[in-house]
Image (cartoon, rainbow, N blue to C red; front, top):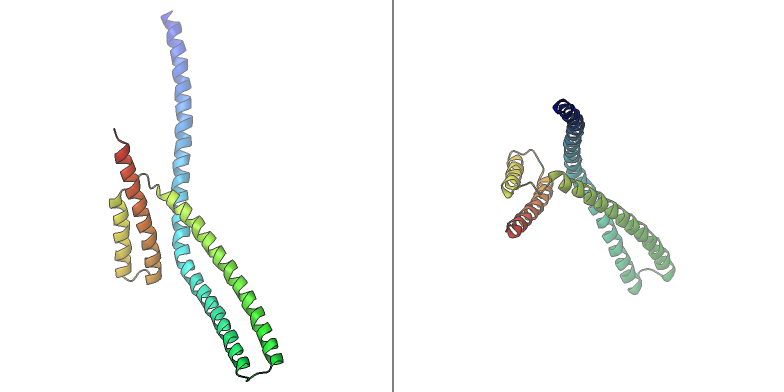
Length: 187
């Protein structure tokens, strides 16, 4: 009877070992995928921080053009009121400027919307990849210090510094809030 019992438990142990090996391999693959994901997100975020600044500069140029056309329309009205241009010239010029203004405004709105959508999507992944539940404020402060050191060494432009620092300050507030929640939930 004890031999049978040993065989049963040996078989059970083989099953446990097989299951253990299977799941440890799956966990290892998940850890590798998580590491690859975090690295990919970090690369995308770094690239986006630079590209976003360039896109924002272009968007600001477009906004300046829109404002310039609005000023031209205002000047055109003043010229008409002062009698410097006739009604036909005013109507023609006003229609052209209004059409251009509408097209540029639509371009601006579309571009701004796309930039905001990309920014939101990247930040969602960035926050996920940071696993803020396991971060400490000291770690975030260390990231901020590294960023400030990089800026001091001239390794990153001012715009990128400001953008990343704002993101890290947000992460710091989230980590602080989570720490408060954890301490309040302890019995």
